[in-house]
Image 1 (tube, rainbow, N blue to C red):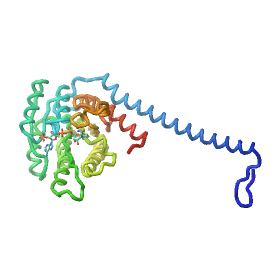
Image 2: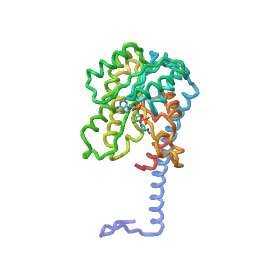
Image 3: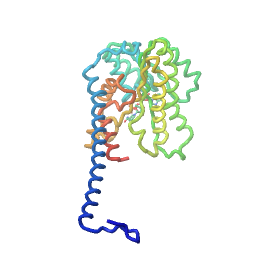
Image 4: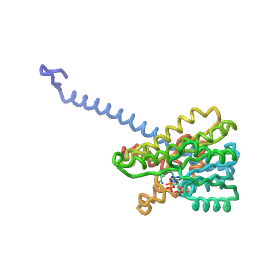
Length: 309
Ligand SMILES: NC(=O)c1ccc[n+]([C@@H]2O[C@H](COP(=O)([O-])OP(=O)(O)OC[C@H]3O[C@@H](n4cnc5c(N)ncnc54)[C@H](OP(=O)(O)O)[C@@H]3O)[C@@H](O)[C@H]2O)c1
């Protein structure tokens, strides 16, 4: 083989051509082998993670969480419905008293009564709209109640969304979303942390969303607020690890209340809130960031693998 005057590669014989072809084939085989090995390693790591986070804690199930995080009370926001209600019920089942926070007093009292009857634990309720929070009124209203109880676990679950084109929507709905999805979480966390630091124990679970990593227009502020929660949790964990405070960001996917319920795809991927929260509570202490249920983890893995979004 030699280089001609015009710069083209001249193949002198058929043997040389075969030789070049073999070299290219071998090169491609090496690239293929490296890619396959890295994909297999990634898959194995994911299987080990799922086993460590979802399967092993299920085997080591502890029916009493009241002492694990140094306080007998759990505080759950947005506790009247959905994930918040189920999370509160599952914590009560694990022998924690619960303080429930949400807007609608009737629904709140109903859930509180249901929980104390079903699980024989104490309940307290704070019914308040988590918007327009001037710090002083919010602090005085909630802080006194929080200071009366030893909070082992705070679950910042409350969240709202608003489908709109960001630029065309009013200022008030944007402000309300920021109050509910960001400000309430920052303020409550700030109120609870001092007693946890003093006791050198406690857990804070901040709920964001499986889809906050994906591009979803028309829910811009919602997903941006959820991304804030993830970042807030990770940095808070670093600051408070020395005080033995455990912080987890939990990212659920679709739940059963969504209208996808009857499609075949949703029957596989949609998890009802009770099943979801049972699994999510089992992951406490195992990882600082989780989907809470193995199917949501699998969903994200498939998305990454096939590069759907
Ligand atoms: N559902 C999903 O598929 C999904 C997926 C990913 C992430 N998430 C996240 O998971 C969390 C729970 O979602 P969910 O669907 O279970 O919620 P949900 O069923 O819509 O319940 C929302 C809760 O928040 C309370 N709330 C709403 N606005 C409030 C306000 N202004 N002041 C006080 N409380 C207020 C509601 O109380 P009232 O009953 O008093 O209004 C209710 O208890 C949210 O942070 C959400 O973003 C959910």
